[in-house]
Each structure stands twice: as structure tokens, then as C-alpha cells.
Amino acid sequence: MKLLVCVSKTPDTTSKISFTPDGSKFNDVGITFIMNPYDEWYALVRALELTEKSGGTVTLVNVGGPDNDQTIRKGLAIGASDAVRIDAEPKSALFIAKQIAEHARGQYYDIIFCGKESIDFNGSEVGAMVAEFLDLPFASYASKLDVSGSTATLEREIEGGVEIVEVAGPFVVSAAKGMAEQRIPNMMGIMKAKSKPFAVVPPVAFPDYAVPVKYTLPKEKTGVKLVPADDMDELVRLLHEEAKVI
Amino acid sequence: MILVFAEAVNGQFKKTAFEAVTYGNKTAQLLGNQCVVLTLGKVNNAGQLGEYGASKVYNVSDANLDSFDSQVYASVIAQAAEKLGAKVIVLAHTSTGKSLLGRLAARLNAGSVAGVKSLPDIAGGSFKVTKGVYSGKATAEYEISSDLKILSLSGNEIRPAKGGGEVAMEELHLTVPSPKTRVLQVKRQEGIVPLPEADVVVSAGRGMKGPEHWGIVEELAKVMGATTACSRPVADADWRPHHEHVGQTGLAIRPNLYVAIGISGAIQHLAGVNQSKVIVVINKDPEAPFFKAADYGVVGDLFEVVPKLTAAMKKFKAG
Ligand SMILES: Cc1cc2nc3c(=O)[nH]c(=O)nc-3n(C[C@H](O)[C@H](O)[C@H](O)COP(=O)(O)OP(=O)(O)OC[C@H]3O[C@@H](n4cnc5c(N)ncnc54)[C@H](O)[C@@H]3O)c2cc1C
Image (cartoon, rainbow over all chains, first blue to last red):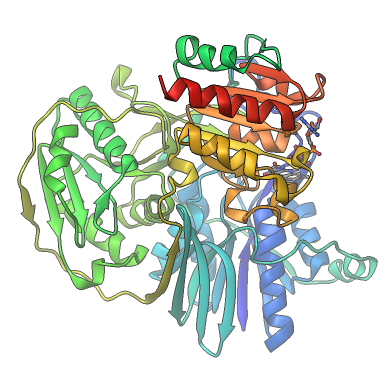
């Protein structure tokens, strides 16, 4: 099996988010970056499990600058076979998807994995875009993926339940919690990662149609109103008369 | 023309579809345009979408549209958009809408924004919308520069607004490709409002001590007409099903009312719920971080407070 896993770099989940004073840019001072958890814990690990079982390779692809190299190396340390970084500072999802699709075209990957969303822009768009550029089926929010021969069976999360789908032939999948369990790279993996093939390639020209221009933080809550524990009638009254939510 | 794709589940339109049509109608008014709705497959009572502002409702019926395949749906919606001359396409930010948004953007070479939470700002000829970023920790304003714009509307952002009257449904004849995926089974819990659509959510955490105590949470949820949710460790320990897990790595929700019981309020939990309109926190620890994000707080033992709240709610509902 020849598998591709799309990985991105995101701020750590505990990060306190802030922006430059004019609100135009993310302030990365003091921020620890990690591999997007959905890419790492679910997409990459499931891809590795599949190749461990039936043989094959797992290639990582990332669209980003040299500041992404550490994240990509971690993916190699966890077990990916090789990596490609498309050297660009991405601003929009469609640009990223175009780069990945151009890399994948002609490589004939059996499955292209991505995480269900990145925890910074939360768009969930890249997988669907790559699938469309390559005219492949797309299974989103998969919490289970099994492959038997050339047929894959997936469990997709939908509102209030799950859907079980079958796909024949190559496809794109976005991975949600449940597809695999996080793996911590060991010393041997980290050593091996240093000598694995890691290509840096230029991007293809493509416009940005939708870009963030201004960021704002939510208004701080004005302060909690405490209600005595033995007076729940008062809480109900406040929710009804003041907050008007019941 | 604004084209709204109104998604039906088992032929029925849900709140998210009414929200999308309302949004499409308001956007159409801003742009001095019409709001046209497209429905796919077997749908019941599509004429009611006129009440939310659709000036016309089109349907494409074909056996290949009766279950969802993003490739087939995107192809048909793209054909409709081209045929009808859409300037903006509006989808709901549901699992279906999210799977279609990127496909349509790639297919139609257009700018897209996922999970929009405001009407477009068209001052000075630009087109800007806002969306939540950093898992709900911030808001970003996006500018879309392509002629065609594609948006998915976040749930619970726009109240479905009735105004118009029923409209007739017209059949649209387009090419429907064969799906490459096959839906084998759909397992949905019946009779429960799915979390992303719920107005009221009652959520509980590790403070519950064990799954055997969840009766008091379920009872409160029942009286409030709420959907239940939980924190991540609770789902990880299999005290509750995984689909109830909210937060950074679970579902991000924005109900009108979120009641948090025995949840500490870790940053990753807050990321998924802090866009709720009103938050009530019940926790025995007055220092619990959740109180900083709450509108109303009760410091006390949940095993005493929750049954009291249920009783007070019952009294209120009884009038
Ligand atoms: C990468 C990453 C992603 C994560 N994603 C998520 C996520 O998506 N969602 C999520 O929820 N968490 C997530 N977490 C975990 C998060 O950091 C917290 O550990 C978790 O939210 C804590 O769950 P809790 O509040 O139920 O439990 P605890 O933190 O143990 O809190 C229990 C609370 O109950 C209170 N309590 C105890 N007994 C009583 C009583 N009798 N009456 C009243 N109150 C009582 C305590 O005072 C305490 O505040 C993530 C963590 C990481 C590292």
C-alpha cells in the first residue's frame, strides 16, 4: 500500500492565543508548536498500522516553510517512510490543497489521509479539496478505517450517530478520534528519522481567494453571578428572566 | 443570485437548513439579489423553505442522491450553481456541508470560508465574513476576493426567521454521476437532538465519580429538553459514549445554554464550549477555572445541587 499523510503544524492545545496589536497576525511569541493532533494521533498512526500489517510506505506531505521541519521530523520518528515539504507560506486552504494535489497526482497513492481539521483554522476543508482536485471519493470524519483487498470500510461521524461506508479504489479520508491511538516516538525512531528521505520542493503558482485579514479575541465575561447552592429556584428565575434562555 | 443547499435528513429539513435559508435570504437582501434553494434526493415539504425566504426551491431527484456521497452531491450542486448563475453558495456547517464546502471550492475555483458566524460585510465593495478560529479561542475576519463565494454557516448563529410564504418546488434536470462510495448503514439515535443542533446542553465531567451516577444528569436534561454531553476523560473512560465528548478534540458546540456539572474547565474543554451564549457552572471547588468563563455559578456538591435544580426546573415547567 502506498499511503500519503498530510500534516500541519499548529499551536499546542494549551496555548494562550494572542495577536499583534493591529489584529492582523497571530502572535507566536512563547508559543509551542506541535503536529496537528488529528494528523498525528489518528491519520498518521492508522496509516502506519495499515502498512505494518500489509506492507507499503507512508509518505508525509506538508505545505510550509522551514519552521515546519521539526514537525515533519517528528512524523518520520513516529514511523513514516519519507517526507515532502512544499516550500511556501500558505495563506488559504485551497492553495494548500492545490499543492498537495499536484504532489499526489501521478504518484497513485492508495489512500490520502488528513486530520478531520486543524486546531488553528478549524476549516475541515483541505481533504475535500484534495479529493476534488484529484477526482477521488472522500470519506470525512472517519473514526474507524479497515482495509481488505482494494475495498475499505469506514465509520463516519455524522450528527447524532455514525454512518458506515464502503469505498473501492483510491480515496481521501479525514481522520477523527477513535481511528487510532497516539504513539510516542522512541529513541530508535528519532535516530532513524535523521536519515530518511526528506524532499523540499517548490510550490506551483496558485491564487489565494479567501484569507484572514483581522483577528479578535472574545470579550471577557463580565464576571460570574453566584447563586446559593440551596436556592435553585433563583437560578431558574435568572435563566428565565435575566438570561432568557429557558 | 444566492444559492442555498438545504440538506434533508431522511427527507426532513432540520433547523440547520432553516438557518442556512434565513442566512441566504439576508445575504440576498444585502446584495440586492434573490435567494434560491436547492434540495437533493427525496424531500418532504420543501415548499416550507419559502417561509424562510427562498424565492424558489429546486429539487434534483435521482436514486443516486438518496444517500450521501460528497463527490456526487458536489457535482450536482456545482452544476446547479453554474446553470443558475450563483454569486454566493451557502451550506450548513454540518458533517455533510463540511464535506461539500472544500469540494465545491476546488471544483468551481472559488474562495470558501468554513463555519461562518456573521452576515457578509460588503462595505467598500469587499466581501468579509467572520468565523471562529483556534478552536473557539478567537474570531477571524476573512476577505473573499473571487467572484463566486462559498460559505458554510455555523449552527446556532442565526435564528431561523419566517416571513415569506410557501413556494412551489420545481424539478431541475442535471447529470447525476454514480457514487464511488456505498453507504452500508446509518446508525442514528432517534428522538435526541444531536449536540451541534441543541439549544440547551447539560454536560458532566469527572466530578460525577462514575457512570452509575448519570441518572441525575439525564433527569435534569430531560426536564430541560436538553441534550447531554461530557468532558473528554469521561468519554475516554467509557463512562459515556464518545459522541458526547465536547472540547478541543471533541465536538465544538454553541448552544444557548450550557450547564457544566463537575467539570473543571480546562482550556481544551473550554475551547469547545465557550461560544455558548450562557454558561452555568456547578462545581464544589470555588477555585475551579470554569467559573471564570461562566455567567452563573453554583458552588456546591453536585449530588445535592443537581436534584434541586431538577426539582426547581420541574416546578418552573409546570408553570
Ligand atoms: C491535547 C489535549 C486535548 C484535550 N481535549 C479535551 C477535550 O476536547 N475536551 C475535554 O473535556 N478535555 C480535553 N482535554 C483534557 C482536559 O485538559 C482536562 O483534563 C479535562 O477536560 C478534565 O475533565 P473534567 O473537568 O471532567 O475532570 P477534572 O479536571 O478531574 O475535574 C472534575 C471537576 O469536578 C469537580 N467535582 C468533583 N466532585 C464534585 C462534586 N461532588 N460536586 C461538584 N463538583 C465536583 C472538581 O472540583 C473538578 O473541578 C484535553 C487535553 C489535552 C492534553
